Length: 339
Image (cartoon, rainbow, N blue to C red; front, side, top):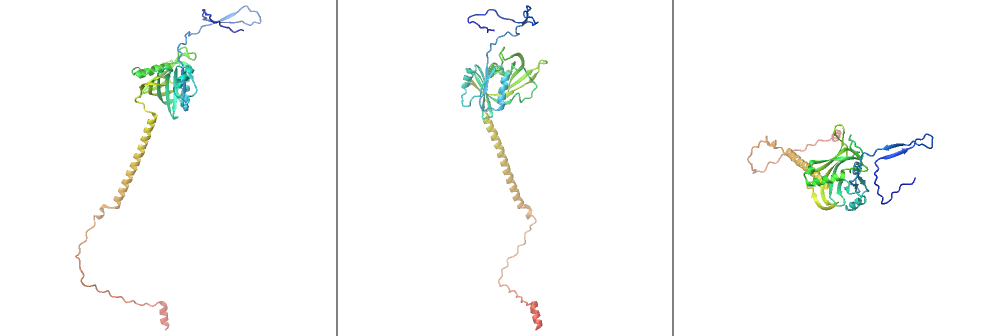
């Protein structure tokens, strides 16, 4: 059967609403006049995919397993996302804009690892901006959390924001950036026409807390699914991955400074213990000296009577010499007896 070729310049006016499928019942006869037709109804949703938001999710080299699992979970939850290979550390961040252009993406989630222990997340509107840089803390992935919640893969989420997002201007900018990045476009080919989970962005302790909950149909209660992480805002830039600074968080403390303060606190504790030991040694030595010198030893000592000084005018009398008595020995006594 020859393939159907569409001619250029020909405009098809008739819109095909139903699909007809014909089949012939095989009763042993080669020619059958009775032809049965089955009419397939048109699809329920006749909407058109107009919001072409695509999010590129990738990272730099040097990330750990937890970050890799978090990236995979976000790609699973966001059917409009794309993946790419890890970027080299030596490359500048402006290269990400070119990667997004090659991948035909207008939003980007870039995870940057430093010192193999600190994780930073960039969320950007490519290629014109704005962009924001966060420090990611307290990461818990889907494989790590043992939650009872579950949702359909590819379903569209609801986005719930804290009321504080509408009070501060920098939070309002982040809210719009989150909406355009995390919301699944309607009628996306890889999405499902269901809404069964909700992304919540809460603000507490000057940080943004991300949670994912399942919506239970019976009583509309929420059960957490995962993943979960905390975003600590650092800066908001006018451009994509750079440019003039629109906002800088005054409460942000870098991880290097935090670790330095912890080390200084530990060193101060050690120094305090050493000084206490030295003080205890001094006290013990002083106690030993006190024990050697008894204060109560002179209580019962009475002073002697003073005698007058006698001056001798005459020499003392000589002492009488004792005569040496000779005592013969036994042998001498025997000889004397023989005589």
